[in-house]
Amino acid sequence: MGLTPPELMAAAHPWLARLLWAAAAAYALAAVAALLRPRAARPILAAGVALHLGATLARGLAIEFFPLTNKMESFSAAALAMAIVTTVAFRPVRAYLVPLLAVLAAAMAAALAFPGDLRWPPPLMRTIWYPLHVPLSFLAYATWAAAGAAAVAWWVRREGEWLALVDRLALWGLVLWSLAMVTGGVWGVVAWGAYFVWDAKVIWSVILWFHYAAFVHVKLTPSFQPRPWARPALAVVGFLLVLVAYVGTSFFFARSSHAFG
Image (cartoon, rainbow, N blue to C red; front, side, top):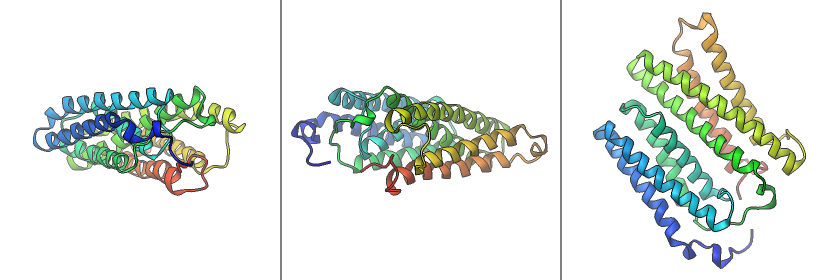
């Protein structure tokens, strides 16, 4: 990538880092509240989301495009999606909140660990399909993470409402992911001239889609109704697949066209 232009260096935009650290502080307070008084965590989370959205919008204004061009922004987007989904699908139960906030904390810590320098988006990102495809993908990841957390809560409490939440979140994630695959396919035509390429990220995206399609099949199959553990188990496995599809293909599969440098 070469040297970062002076106007894009983090030192030239210290307020961007301050906004992000303020969001991280709000998330940390929400985690403490989740342990001590779970119902109080939601408004604190919402405040963190507002600060985080502000930081993301400011980065976008600085480069005049969608701000997802480096490792820091990728993990920041993952954390923001987690915070949004946790706020929307909030339940004041520690067994559910603690796993979700742990994933949020890990994503936020990773974002803050990388340099906050800005980057101009490369030509293949300069299309409307990029800012449509990427947020849908991160929201699907976060929704499936919430389904995994609801599965943990079901294992702890064995209450039917948690099984219903697992089902709902898994289905929402599948819808979001299907839309992400459609917009990503169109973007693929614009960027590489094909709807499908034999790329690690694309292959794992298809694996994820089939896994959650199988989840829906299990839910609708009468022979699985006496086995309520099956869907929570699939939700937990699905979250592990999400980690491979996102972290693995983006940061460890060097030959992936979706990998960040």
